[in-house]
Image (cartoon, rainbow, N blue to C red; front, side, top):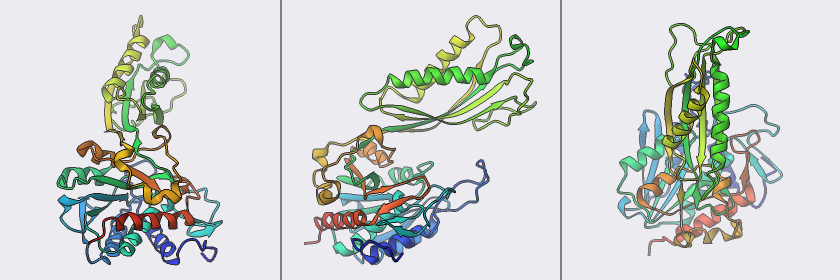
Length: 402
């Protein structure tokens, strides 16, 4: 990493690099692809060790689920927390397609899995905690499983109700922009059953695949009508379809189907993810659209398509914070964000929305300049990372012990 930008301190770069070298991606082995299991514990222990270098912090590791750690640190009574600094420990799994060497610095950018999302921000916060000195009214939440099931944040919200900060700063957020809200997240799986028949005689069956195609078209049209206050989008994350073997039943997950070219497919399953920008987009309303679409498909037909299962996997609220309530949080970072604001219609889901939903707590989601999250060549800009660290130090010193 000899090409390191002088605008970033060697210590901050070294800490970022050390965190990124600790694998913290996690995926159950029963998912497609049989990816080996890792977890966040090794990283959590390293993060806890760094925070423990601040003797004024009471640091603990709490398991949100077996092997799934949250790191908590408070400088006093957790119930008197004014600012909660939050960031997630996990990353998406490794992928192919990298054109830059991992753990390298090129053109002022540090490249590594997790550099942008969100280990660069965590490194800046850990170092800022030490450099700012003793504080009062500050808490830290470094949590697991942001990328998949939100186990860590859900556990915190449920089991630490006494921690009700005046404001939350999420280290995971827009790159060098002020982000004070996000859309919600809705994930549903639908299972359709049709009727098998001979492919040369379409009237002998009802294709579940064709029905799914029509349903997705109706959903796309409906979603486009729900753009207030923010644009709603639909992602068809996965489709499994074909002929259902004898004795196989729908279970909510991808069904075991067979590809038989001369048979009309009688089974279709789809995983649908909505980024909900309107309060009218709910699990219940989506199901209503699907049922109406099926009713139209079945009209005047002797063989019917049926909705065998409708499984809601996630239904997470969005949030919107009044910038006036957050005034003192973005101010120390003004040299970095220069007043730029990220529109929620163009951003991902940030699970600090669960804290805001519980308490009405305003939240600022902002990281350093970065890019490539969830993709090859992920990077964080080192000059921006240093500026982010400096902003964190300035913010924490507002909470300095008298």
